[in-house]
Image (cartoon, rainbow, N blue to C red; front, side, top):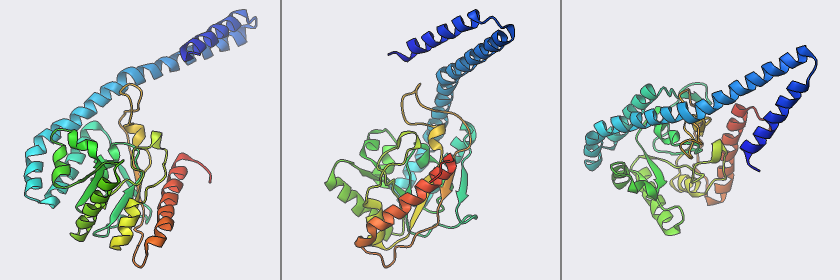
Amino acid sequence: MNKNFCAAMVTEQFFEEVLMEKNEYIRLNLYVYLVLSLFLWLKVIIVRTILMPIWKIWFALCFAIPFLILFPLFYFALVTKRFDMVFKLKRFWARIISIFSMLYPKIIYTSKRKHKFPKPCVIVPNHTSYLDILFSPFYIDHTAVYMGKNELLKIPLFKYFFVYLDIPVKRKSATDAHRAFKKAGEMIDAGISTVIYPEGTIGDRGHLKSFKNGAFKLAIEKQVPIVPVVNLNNWWFLENGGFFKSNGRPGIPKIVVGNPIETKGLTEKDMEELKNKVHTFIKQELDKFNGKKN
């Protein structure tokens, strides 16, 4: 049955109960309750259909305009393989977006103080929103490459990141995945860290999915540390989905950076245990933030 039709039936029934109520005090309270309910309903409609879309348009402008201005510098740094410069430009771009879109990431370290990332390392965040990638330069302190879906190569200008630096991968192709992880290994050999989202896709409303093996296999093969990262509520500020159906608002995204996990001495037999350890850490942080009891 249509949700709007059900809501209309409930409202009509409520009106009838109010009109039939003989006690004036109860009747007044029911009227107040009804008015407040209608006000809250209108507030939700206004926020969802007017304010959120306006903010999303503004966010898109905050994203695109600085990128277009900085693109000549990005392109120069990419083609000349000045990858440190690329990452510094990404951080500068992220700060501009943060200021003008009124999104101010709060970075929380489990060690209670900011620590340097091992260089190189494999960084494994959960994936909840496009903000996960955008705000990662706020906590990554050295040059890193990103593994992302092959479809990003179709985006004009943005594709050059994946042509010259970052690593595209066809998620359903085992051959292409092998090629992508081989390139990631070469980057680590060159001292460049790799960011891999082990879920392989954006989770629904922050829900943590199961992890794929690739990031953990890579870390063990190269004997480099893994750094788990928890994007607690990025999806609340920019949710993946329809323009009018998904969240979009300013605020304070919160990101937890875990302590590096050493892989020296580990073999492929330890991969499942390592994967479960990272998954458990991220899930516990999400549950703690959401007020869930284990």
